[in-house]
Image 1 (cartoon, rainbow, N blue to C red):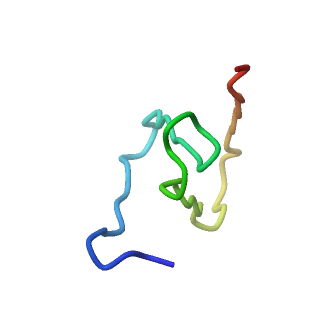
Image 2 (tube, rainbow, N blue to C red):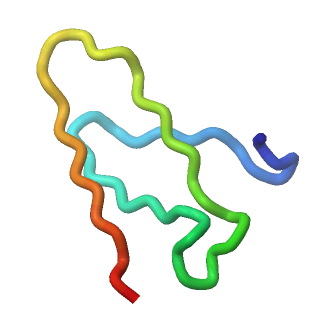
Length: 53
């Protein structure tokens, strides 16, 4: 699933990330795969917005 020329990255706590999937314009086959760590105590918020074109 991970291409040889790519690596696993992470973002800092409380950071905001904008992730593009494979259906994003001009991004076919290069979509992001996201996995959250296990929930420890505080709740998390995930807001997903789809492009409207």
